[in-house]
Image (cartoon, rainbow, N blue to C red):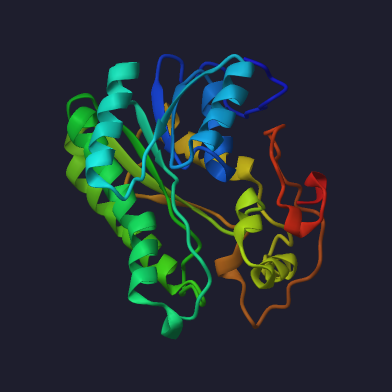
Length: 295
């Protein structure tokens, strides 16, 4: 595996012989996580709605010496999810891990969210993850064990302008805790990772007004910087690994301490928190207009 593409802190071959599904694997955190898992020896099943993005990531992984299959699927579609999981098993012969990363949202005050908009975000960030988890469990992990990591968000104390997403992410955390209890008897661990403000390509998908806010939100982070995709991926990989064998029903915050900030304490500018950038192919968001070293 080419070390120039990914420099993981985990030992080489950690996931050798294993297959891990990564939903939303065509961009952002999903793309980064897929690269790290591949770098550590896993065969990666990339899932997403746009085949062009999946093909691009597959080509990157294969160019680095890894193995990746692509699976076009809308995770909100139950029949499609059933077929997706069956296809992964048919191609790889096993499923050792699942990263439920696919999702999305848009900014809108609660009073202005339509029913259609609410349901679309909840289906993307909660229902879809449930469907993929259930099918992975019933079709494979119930009999063979495995590990699931659900990606949620910094929804502590509410998500103003993102009420639909906050509700869905909180629901996914509750699902994580419940599934961890019910599926423990099958040797299946279920955990979550909650990213905060992470400088990923997803920033560029928002409207200009929101992009402008991203350029100043860093000041509300105790560490005074944005996180990197690689820092989130490292948490995901740890929870999938054998080192987390006694961790289930839990979550890891990767947020620079944002929920701990208080109005009674003035945050001071600092550059002493140095980011971890293990992914050489990371694509910092254009809207921040900063170089990778300053993310």
